Image 1 (cartoon, helix red, strand yellow):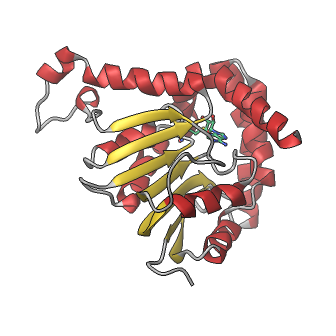
Image 2 (cartoon, rainbow, N blue to C red):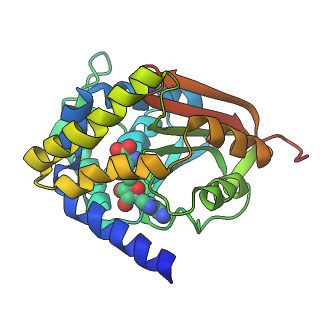
Image 3 (cartoon, rainbow, N blue to C red):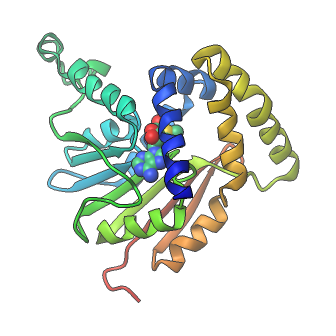
Length: 255
Ligand SMILES: C[S@@+](CC[C@H](N)C(=O)[O-])C[C@H]1O[C@@H](n2cnc3c(N)ncnc32)[C@H](O)[C@@H]1O
């Protein structure tokens, strides 16, 4: 019951900030999140005739990246307003006038592939898919938000095919003590201020700091992935561990 109410509060919070979410992401990361998401796509390494799932897809950034590989991509999220923006972006990219302007040498933002991406409202803790369905599963800035991250990881393993990849992009915990202090100060004081200016919502951006305090961080997530049977795990620390990517593969035979 307590978890249900936490999840519903979380959903309301993301509903509230959906409209300003992309702008806030660009400004707060100085557009760098776009490059980190491309890195997620390359680690997911999907190709045509494969299936990818992006959990906590929000407005669809990672799902759209994955779709450029020709794989079939499903993006799921709890927040309808976030999904509405993702769906709107499909129309924006696929508007007939933009299709006419398609030039394979000069792929603009508006001629991305979208016919292979589908968005569904669903819970990352209870995925509506059969076991061993996807070749890759990605989650960007979502694992920290999901109320039970261990259960979410177990669900990912369940629906991932043997040999498939899990790629998790998240705020990290810098191992260097000084950098860690500076970084957490930035998250506690500067990010909520920017959130107030851009999205008129101080609380939703202070939440990044609060949720990161509760999140176990990249090293423990790596251990959990191993506990679940993941192999070839790696941690890619970006900007001294301020951002981080956890990667693992599902073995062909579970131990
Ligand atoms: C910070 S946003 C990340 C959006 C996107 N992945 C990105 O990188 O920009 C986190 C998203 O997780 C979603 N979320 C939180 N808990 C969830 C759950 N249990 N199942 C599905 N989505 C969830 C929220 O609705 C929100 O859209």
